[in-house]
Image 1 (cartoon, rainbow, N blue to C red):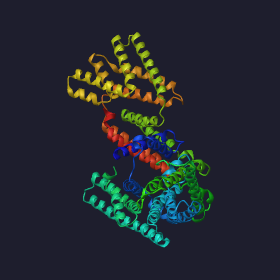
Image 2: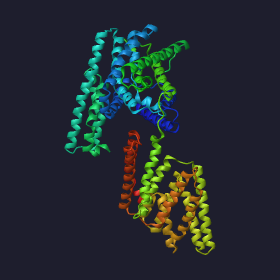
Image 3: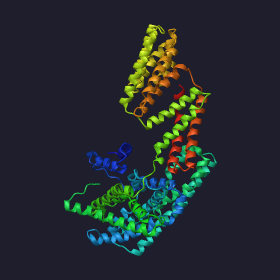
Image 4: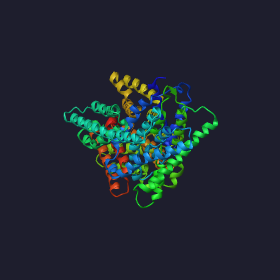
Length: 631
């Protein structure tokens, strides 16, 4: 199968895994991805698929680590540099040496150099993996920062150690002194070259901004090309391409704020075959390595890391569990050669199985143990609570608006809809309420007809209007297309013009239907406004009386539909400039609310940043879709 298709399937699987993780939050994301990946592996068309490890490192791992390096906090790296070096270099080397000798001594089937390579494979940690498994019991900011920074550098340290050990195995020669010197040369040489190249590329981007050539295509192209170029040049020099990429990312991150201020345009497993005894042995080796690695990490964290005087053992256990393995470990395992010195490498599949066992244990154990180690986060910092409060602040600002009431109500309803999307009711409940409001409005119209307030024709046409309202409110795709075609034909026939027909097809039926019926009533010499007002008042009265804590979200959806219909029937158009100003006013009120909560210490920085990002995205969404509020 074509590799482009394979990557497309993988991307779709990642998207599906993230969707499942959002709806089943008790199961961490990595387990969904592992399960879906296993399902792909059994598909006949994918069983023989192989991915060149060098391509994987060059095209996937390098850009990934470059991005992490850019986003890393230079201040936090500086403050915790001692701990980072201790974990990323000291712990990696000690683990490789001690556990390598231990594995070879206990399991002589594994040569010493391969034992070193195997331990090097399982030393790189993945902060995103432990973040995923700890999503229900979040770690503190300082703990996650240290784990993230450690994973940024020990990825490269593990890769360098792995390459040296694998080279020793293939060549059959191993010198501890030469290996250590090679490690230091490759490690720090990669950092130096990456930092220099990173600063040169930063200066290039700054110069392009200065001369006005900061087109998004140019700047994004340079951004995408940078990690690939840095990785390639470092590898050609015999240095660590991964470390060069990390250093380049950090170097560019130092200048990121300056670039942001000066260029706003830029911002926008093969299955193991063999006897059951061999399988059990390899899994047992994996369990042993995970346990031994965890013990070394626990003792190292307890004795050599500066994590404060309080709860040192608890912090050490958290750092031990934070050493979860992920993408780097698996990619290193699969990068082992299939042919060594002209012969098939018989231990390759077994070593992959051992590495996979360590990865699974590093993901499963934190899920079981972390809840007993991590203090519960206070509810006041839960994002969804503050999101509702933030949106309420914007709605309150619109309710206080007395001059431009119609435009303010549009904004308030739009913000209310965001609340509804975050607390969506069942479709059946929503449908039941719609059915009841239709009956309420029809009874009201029938009473007006019986009393002689409206004519028989007016009642007849208005009931048709109500029925089509019900049809439109369902918003199914086929109904939407049917209504667009229907309004296109009717508006084209009514005005005998292609432009009117085209505009009708491009206009949302929810927006066009009130306008269409208002024109229909006018052509018959009848007034739709007082009839709709009577129906609207009756529906609003019913919704207010029927609302309770169980159906509030569904009531809000129905109420917003009728309010929107009411405005479009009674108002021919809205002032776009005023509406724009009202949206800006609401967004400003939201930002002031979260800024005040953050200043008072009620809101932590992580949630503050997410809410601020939400406001920014809402502004962009409005700017891209503002015509839909006016049409």
